[in-house]
Length: 182
Image (cartoon, rainbow, N blue to C red):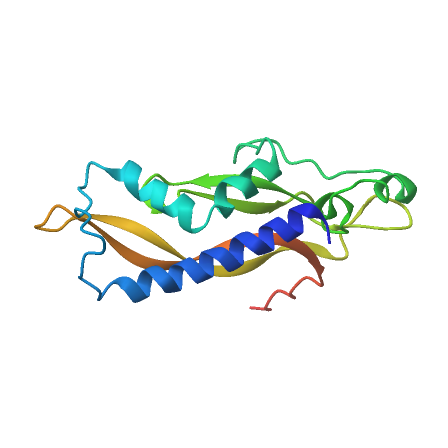
């Protein structure tokens, strides 16, 4: 497994665990350690708490390197098999290659989610090193819990709601669905 795949798996597991942890704390109204409740304007404290709990977000996003913009050009790699086999990352060597874009939402915890984006419509033929459209590249999705800010309660604390979102974690080759005859 490549470094990127391992880091992506770690991010997903951490997010699931944190989602369950945060959802479980909703009913617990007791203050711990005499700390004051967070005010809506002090979002920085929320982010610091997130980094202490998880830390995976920033490490994973750094590992992805320079993420591409969502509207950047998609190009299907073409190379011979011996060249592709030397590329270090799984997402580049796959028969359904993908890259990552960063989905950023400042009102969400975590605020940045890496989303895999398939680079080819078809799949790479391992013998010829070119795209073959008899199979198609499709995203592999995973559902994770995230938190969205809802505003403040009467005590000045930030309120959140948990929501499940789909994250594309990679791409795979599949036989295309046949269209229904009308």
